[in-house]
Length: 154
View (tube, rainbow, N blue to C red):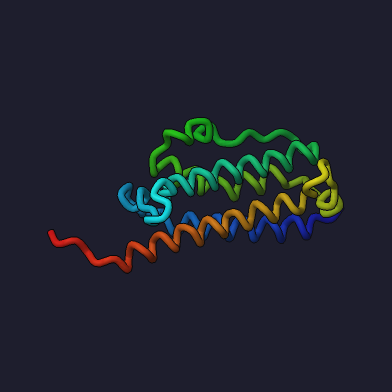
């Protein structure tokens, strides 16, 4: 069975994850704790942790819905709430390979399978990709805002 479309979607997913990971790879903690004035609790770190949790959760949902062999996410995911920058960066780097390995037996024919009324497997994978690109956009917006602010006198 073909999995051309699955591979195309996974390639785009890996691109989105890599863009996010590359952006924040060397950010120090103070930069990860930045936010926009309108939403001070939505720091870069909070946004990243939400994206990581959602991404792994969506891939697991697809895995379960398609009855694919069980792949466990990295153990560090369990401690995501308290995780610091190195763990977050590590989990980001592992997201692409985890998705590729987890979904390697998913076929194009299965993409249209609708286990619940709301989503097909394809729609869930597309949703996961879009969520990562939205995360990149949110982080860029925060970074651009802070880069445009006058530097404080030392």
